[in-house]
Image (cartoon, rainbow, N blue to C red):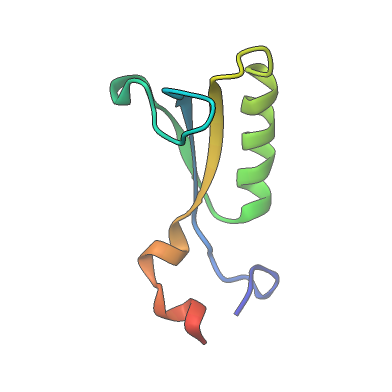
Length: 79
């Protein structure tokens, strides 16, 4: 099933300052901004875009969308 069929597909939006431009490693894990969990990609994307635009002048601060539904049920992707 897909998001169009109404199935809940959880997504997490997180961000923070990275240790370097070429890595995806946070400089300080205690300062990671856990924005929230959203029921679908569209909702997560809208929040991600807003947070990313707020930090556009800081090249080392990045926000990410984590597909929690893929971590919670990895067998579903194999179908």
